[in-house]
Length: 240
Image (cartoon, rainbow, N blue to C red; front, side, top):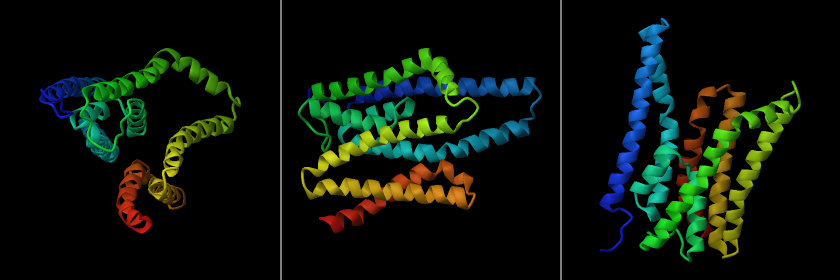
């Protein structure tokens, strides 16, 4: 029987896990509403809170959907659906899958047909992210204590440290783009698209800061991603 990344069994396993997570969400939602009634919070306030929270989940959901579509090109639909519905983020999943595929002598430009390659990618993506869970579970209090001790009452050094950590993470991803440039002109296309996405994010940041459009914060990421995807078409046409 030939292997398929869209096999029915993978769909069933993914759906079962996602249903458990959805059931947990519904359980805590019901418990929260019951608790709100006990402490005297009006149902109008509860409904307003649920509605506003639901609306603010639309923007992150768009980013997740884009991630699922991106990963489904070579991993099929059920596994990326499982990963990004529960724990993963495309900023981690795609580099992890790319590294694992490269170690197996293949690429992520076409659908995976070898079950060993698929299993290697799946285990790499799954085990690699567990470290973060364990770190938060057993080390969060110590990390928070250490962060709060930096600079005392002056929070500027803490902000600088967090920005530096974030830029370091982004630099690791950008390094993958520069590695592709060695293969010739096509390698410049992802870099140009990444710069376009960064420019769109900068514009969103300016609108939030200068025009006080704080609501844009929830939509900046999907706007940057969707905008860069749209701009990738003329960028590719111009650079080829």
